[in-house]
Image (cartoon, rainbow, N blue to C red; front, side, top):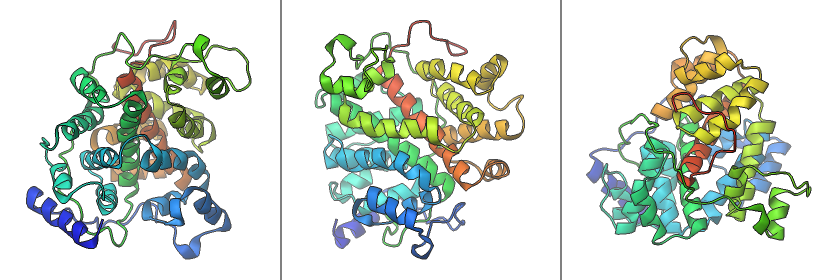
Length: 397
């Protein structure tokens, strides 16, 4: 985008929305790493994972937790640069999600790079009801549904299928879901706008608490791949050790798109196996966000994992009630997840409670865990991933 076009974006958005949101004057909760502070390890990670080596404040902030970079960056890069979506569609989804999530940082970053959209296109994305091209409206409805209900309704899904094949459908859902994870993470960390991002934002969407009133699909929209029909590539992807064991429906569903599967799996394995959170804290966060999103599959998969991590059967059941009856770090985690879901960031009071128990790396991992499994819930619900036989049901279902 030229400087003149970028300036027009800011002017048009200001005219439509009435004012610009100002860059937050509050200090970052975890300051971005400066060039002088970069270690050899961090420089090597930048060379391996950051496109063009350009360090913006979002990445500088995550560099406070170097071990998270190999888990987070591959899927972030895939969604931003490599997916099957056109640059136009990708940008519409990322910007709309940034607006819905009240993310001044992502809005500024994405408008600064929004060469695929006209100033008028950008301005329309700040309206509660968008009236652009017919398909842009479909994309906006999809983003709105995922943000507010963790689900895409049948009318919108059918409209998406008039233009998209399976891989594009999956990429579209994950573009919103990944952008949501990044938005809530950067909101909570209070990542400061970079120089050059300018005032290219608008008054953010009024915070709308999410809800779990979506239907549970009886028939998958994207059926899991049956083992009988796996190609050699899929066998290597899903059962690399040739064990012949049954593979869960979630993996067989995501394997419909191998290029997406691999980097998304990096993120999943980081959260489940490599993060700095204690097992109990991780499973508390995953179960609570799964419950809030109304994800039957996620609950069924992680209720046993929660008990294995030290939660009692009674405690697993009480997660449905939020922090009522909990204390200490457990209560702080549950409140943080609720705030991320309802308000797209962790409040000052809850952040202080988390910071009393966790170091910087663990604080970042709380955000990545809740955001990452909100992402998964959106996909599980929308694709209609079927429950495994004998699955444990979610409370209230």
